[in-house]
Length: 303
Figure 1 (cartoon, one colour):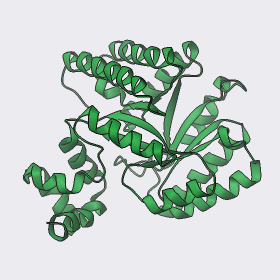
Figure 2 (cartoon, helix red, strand yellow; figure 1 turned 45 degrees about the vertical axis):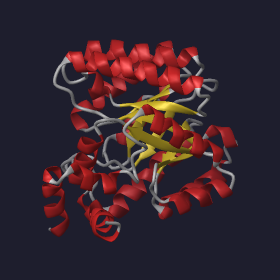
Figure 3 (cartoon, one colour; figure 1 turned 90 degrees about the horizontal axis):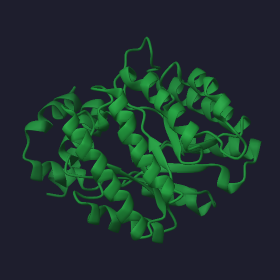
């Protein structure tokens, strides 16, 4: 209850106070700041995926602006020789306003990344977006088989079936590339698992299927139990080092991240940045009120 109260009042607090918490998990408000973070992560041996913060928009002018920003991000990051790829949220490009316009914008971004032999990850958003985002993957992978992938969320009851239904796209030279995460959006129990043990069980079931089918899993978790479970599955299927990776969020569980890398596994760090950091932070807190204790620590312990 205390955490929910904090989550509810956070949007009304001064932004400079909220930033004390947010700055540890957001790479900055500008592209230059994000690229500096990405370079430092590369120097540590980690790959990156850069994401411009911003999700649900009100009109297609915003979608056009977001597309132009992403094209600039790709050009600038490639010029800076960042060892990483890109992530985007389809609602930032008008998915819930006009899905064809959104597709054209995202296709242009994927084409730009592909011109550098690089890759774009389509983030999975809440349940009204799921079918449309799977459709986006199908259309884009047909044209850019090596340059696009999707996020799937283990807590959704439909996820394993979704993965299985996409199996026809999985080819030896261009395997399906999934970021597998637990999922953070608030969904009803009728469509999403709620218990910790259930979510973890299905996460590992999904990962088992991906490895069995020789798909490319990006194992996105900060849960030590899931990391250990992933190690066991990797030992079972013995994929090559370039046939999977681990992923973690910037600023989260750095010690666990280091330990995974020290074992020789590829690691990619999600690097979010942008002017919409405040909206991102407050939305994420509402979706995960347990983070409130971290905010209290940031505001009152760190001043």
